Image 1: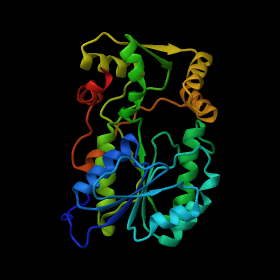
Image 2: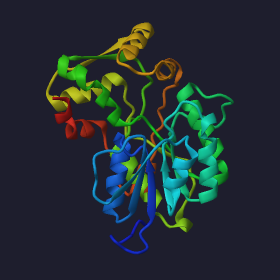
Image 3: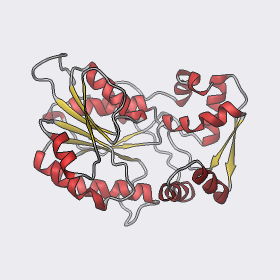
Length: 291
């Protein structure tokens, strides 16, 4: 496990840039970095509510001047690439190359290193970004589906006992808190302790969407069930919810083509120092959000 010893307010405390800081995972990472005494700067399109001790740069990862400003004095970057197009990452790569911070990139467990083309557009952009970042020798964290993605079911759970959506491959769903623990351990590790990975971050069991809904129902003491929707109906509902068409098509492609992943690793424990938690535990801890 990397040594993350770093006394709060130490003059040697590292400066960390967090992208995607307003998301489910980013918020967990920011809080943990602060608890370790790191100086935290967040790059986001919109500033979140004021958070003591956190510096914000508002802008876009595709804008060179914004990225340049955000990287001043930064020791390490937690990078989430939010777009389905890696071609527009050229300015970002150039600025990272000039500033030369440590880069920790959040990728996907679905990336197949032996494949000429990946299984769907979402995985393809992760593979492309890994390739574009290669000269920077990033630490690559390939994450399984985050448990927090089920927050997208909140309105359906509040409205009834059926959660409907496109079917998806069974995966070893991972608690975003565990991914955050692993990411922070790497961000704060000493250079000579780093292995560039890729690390494959998974939960301890492989679950279908029906399994996840059942666990959530148990946490809520309700009989919830999952209903798989035909592709055309799933597409129309996501579009009606206001999701951009390119994202909807990518999600549909992922649900149709992505192969099942039955791989379970101990990489969370190796990095974070504790075993990965179960989705059932996540559901209990977050049940109040679905009421």
